[in-house]
Image (cartoon, rainbow, N blue to C red; front, side, top):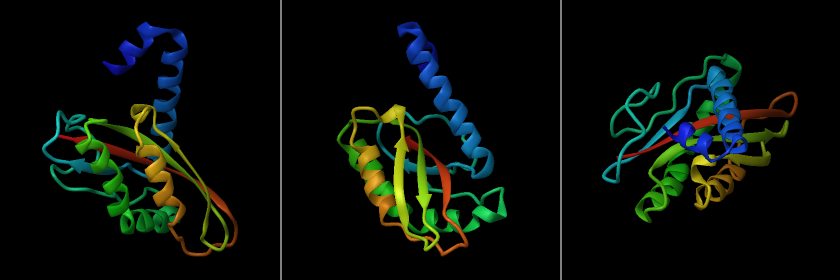
Length: 157
């Protein structure tokens, strides 16, 4: 429904939404989306989100073994991301949506850059809050720097 509505507003908006959805699906092909819930506020995004469990946050195991350490760090830091979402939900600024957290991870495990792509949360503080959280994450050292796109689904309801 959201895509149809945006498409009626103009081709540019439709193109951006479709591009985001395509990138979200690409990211989710390697790492299933982390799902966060905020109970008691509005409608949920729907019950057919892979890995979603009613009332429980969930970080599924990645499909690629090479990303197991990334999922582990996301799981360890999920509480901080949830605080960002709950703040927005309680303030009534969001009902839920999807985001992609794009991380540049240095060989020493430090996060060197974070970009949060979240068209469902335009006008809210969620992307900035998640970016601030992710900048502090620490990954195990590796042989080289790497870039990872991690999908998130935020559900209110």
